[in-house]
Image (cartoon, one colour):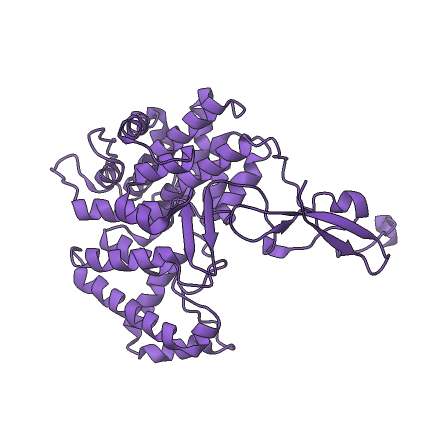
Length: 434
């Protein structure tokens, strides 16, 4: 029981109810409304869950006002600058950073599961060649439940952990094969001698007929992309995984649901929209101010993509990391001249936005999507694969939250309520009398 309470007074009926105030270790307090409907018959109304905490979680904390993001207490800047994606995965799943021995064992477990069941290859041939890679990913990940029956006991903690390892391990293979199939290129199998990022790049771009060496800078860039996208608290796709998982569905179906949610342009597809906007500005021949003025015009539907965030009211800390990375990688890209132009436009646009009162007053700062698309393009990743890369990175966050939720005895099947606005009672009339 909380030490503090809030009193809700219904001015219509005069009824009062005391509600506990909950105190997390960081972040805003919350009023516990779990007893509200049962005791008063009143629901809360919160479209988009703008003011609602759906769960307790120990995994990720973000402070939108301060521009702070921490995984298990570790700032994202330190993890991205000094750590590896495997360390980040271990941290999100286990709560602590691994020592050298633990990291070696964990990485070995991941490597052991990178192969896909050979019959899964047949799934790809069932898709059209021009199918969106996210459509392929949703289908293949959901289908894993037909192949890995031994990982279906969601009530066994050890089994859940092993499922998390399996999904993290297989996602790069699934993602790379989606790209290979769409381009009519032979599938490349995982190479156990390579690290996580190197292995993905090898499966994406190597050819059986030629020697392929992974560029260390590109591998490191991918590591940073993966780390900065690994988790982000209760976003739409993570909430979807929790919502689906609350019905005790198998983990592959729950993660597939998360992938489907991420596919939406308002969520995982935003970095592609940023690149298309930058290309539009580049190709228009018009000054940047023209597009800034369009964005400020309420009667115009044009939006500056990559600015503002549902939670952050300060500079997205991930955007700062990726901006620096963008400068490093752009000079190494085979298409440096084309992408350098996009980066120059992005930097100029950011400069205008950060000095313009319109953007300052609305706290519209660059978000993680503003630079990530340019980096991916410079790595040779096509735009229709951008969201796939996001899904690959976010898999560890999804499975960490799913694992946490399934081990929480407070978990109940999610069942939101509604405020009904339709017709009230009507009597049925026979068809020949209507």
